[in-house]
Amino acid sequence: MDIWTVLGIEKTTDTKVIKRAYAKMLKIYHPEDDSEGFMRIRKAYEAALEYAESGREDVEFHVSDAGTFEDDNKHTRENILNPEEIIRTIDISKDERSFPQKEKEQLLEKVETLYSNVFKRREVKYWQELFAELTVDEYHYLDEKAWNFFNKNCSLPYEVWKFIDAEFSISEDPRFIWTKFVKFDYGVPFDCFDPNLDIDYSSYVKFRFKVFEVFCGGDYQETVKLAQDAEKIYNGDYFVYKIKGISLYFLHNYHQAIEALSKALSLNDSDLELLLYRGNAFLKYGQYKKASIDFKSVLLKETDNLESLKGMIMCLFNMKKYGAAGRYFRRFINKSSVGDFQISILLEEYEKKKLINKLRKILNIIRGADHKLFNGERAFSYMLVFFLIACLVPPVLFLLLTLPVGFSYAGVIVILYLLSRIFRRKTRK
Image 1 (cartoon, rainbow, N blue to C red):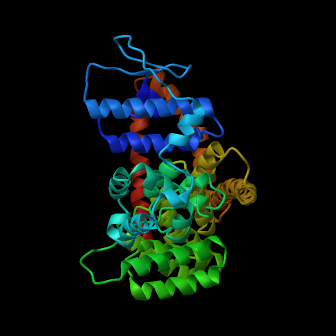
Image 2 (cartoon, rainbow, N blue to C red):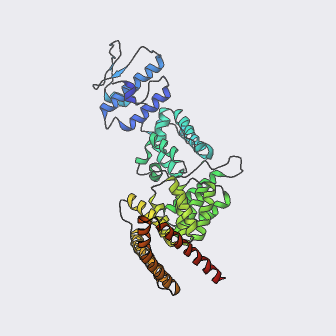
Image 3 (cartoon, rainbow, N blue to C red):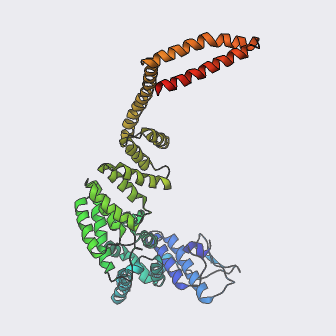
């Protein structure tokens, strides 16, 4: 097996990279738990260092399952230590006394300095640079202390959390309390801060994290209070307005929720969750037209968003636009894999209203016909016209089709009809 595969890195002459890879592997293959695995990574480590120091491009070291090295020239490495000797010569000791206290303090100071800069801590590259400079002992010490440091210093973007977890596997440590932030992106932004403003962002970020922590705990009253205090420090962070607006929504304070969510949308109009919450707040507040605008905005970006389809149905139903609601009913039913209680009730009512509207149209047609046929003078006129057509049309058609003189009769009839129309107009005047 190639030594670089054993260490989990690409071929390199950078000893820092080799030492870091070795330190990471030691967490997996500890000499007391897996002596064979430890021997394999130890030999790969030694070979990699030898390669880096010699700079020989023509040599390829390999590690066999039996724990021996061999190069491309078939030379055999000699004097390989046994497991007990390797454990005694390991340069990463579990005894912290082997790592001077002064160096420990200096290391933690480096990490704290990076964390204290809110504009650098949000960038993964600065953490990569810091860890790349660590010696094996420093890396091991930081690995032991990572859970404690990041428990106290936890206001970090999701991408940074993922990188730190890849280095130290802190999410697997039961002592680490912020595993949820490593596993899921809550959208906590760090790119909304303006370095040109004279604001203590470091204190503000800590304050904001407290707001989010209380919100996750379900204390919405306290969340609103803390969010209002945070706004006094800095009012350009849409995330605080978002949390405040959602908390007010859960507290059924829809008017203030709409204000907070609208402020958040003015700072970040691409957050669909904000539109959904504001749309539902408008809906609860009885502003159906405004609610439908928010739901439509979401559907323009996510055509199958069930929450927005449901919101549109409820808005249109309350505005009595049943025809338009019918289209959204069909889309919702086609996309929803499970039934929805509210939609089921509205759908049943919609079908009833649809049937009633059809019956109403039929009744209106009957009433209109009844009014025309049985209303005073019009009824007599319709009967007279019907009688004349029934009596005159057949003979006229016969004469026209059989005798040339029939055209004369037809002309006389037309003239009489026109004279009668003229006479009627004069009598009306």
